[in-house]
Length: 369
Image 1 (cartoon, one colour):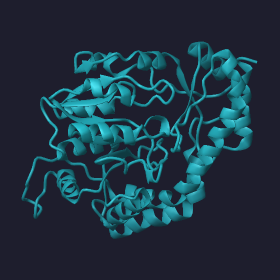
Image 2 (cartoon, one colour; image 1 turned 60 degrees about the vertical axis):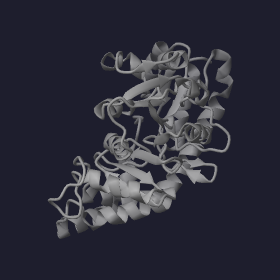
Image 3 (cartoon, rainbow, N blue to C red; image 1 turned 120 degrees about the vertical axis):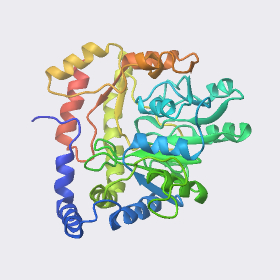
């Protein structure tokens, strides 16, 4: 049996009738841009996350850029962020002219280490941009306290953790602004690119709505600020609205599958293998199930021989990328660099059968036992 890394076909079959009906409704009314599905999707998303406002947009990168623009972050402003994430986190800072300040991660959770943030703050610091990596929220309470003390904004990059429970809140609604991605491979994905911005600040939401529509003001050809084309189309919103109804069940399934993995691999710690660690009072939505292994190349080759696909998220710390080596300030990021050499992700999707997971487990265990 061929093992997929992510299985979106089975998910579609479970939702086929509802998705097909909603897609045909869009085709019939023909309002492909800013149709009624957009507002409906935003209402459902903000209800799920618990925020006052949700502004859907064209992708997760644009979501981050819109948030930075709405907060007035621009040339010369420093933004403290993690050194270990997908490049879009740093990319948007350069796009608005800000200066990324890269700090190290907690080697257990792979999220930004809040203990390293205070030392990175200068008079030029405007915001903190933590990433909730692999599906687990960062230490948002600690980060928010630091930000409040120094009068800084906090923008959560929740592209991999959308809706993950954190104490009594959900990822996306843990700071001044939360941004997420609906890329198809994300825990909640559409059938193309998509994203959203969440906030409880009504004035900020108004700015975000304007920025999304080329800075539009009171009418179509009046522009109150510099904006961009950040709209999400009606078809993608129709898909998201249907998929969101199944999402709580999918989170439960992802946690069940992750627990089976971790139990099966617990004894591999004697061979230097580390299973994911979830911090207290939070839950992951398991965008990835990521192991730390001593010899990644050998591990990946042996799994490939057994038909098990893997992925590396991520093989290089962001400030070590060619385009970013001189892009900002870099503090000691040894944990990020070491993790980049050892992490590897296994297949993870809510419709994974026990049979498929047992094949994966057996393949991993056979590398060491």
